[in-house]
Image (cartoon, rainbow, N blue to C red; front, top):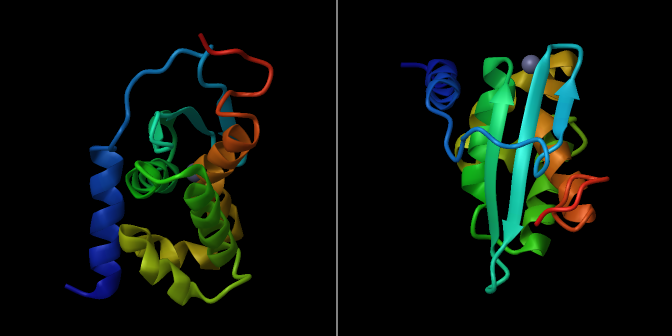
Length: 149
Ligand code: ZN
């Protein structure tokens, strides 16, 4: 099995069985969309008493958007908000080609999305959930305009 085949396998596995995925109410998780591809991701962000981030998502879309969201929840869950923001910054910049792709090797299974960097339209698929998470962290874990609880 080549590395590309292995990467493809990881992406499809997360697409078929997304982690931390469940139906979410629009009130707690505004939809973030990538119109170019029809991807739509809803995200729920909570921080517990220990300052650890908890995440769930509800997504529709292509294999790249769903698998990236699934891998993101696995990587970010249990981290602090500051750590989460640093990871978002590294992933998004590596996907945009602003920093070397080797950075993705430090992010576990997310290295499987390396090949996507060649296709700017698909980079939007891969970074959709990450932009959604960044926005919610900035807004105090709520989708803008909504109050939780
Ligand atoms: Zn897509």
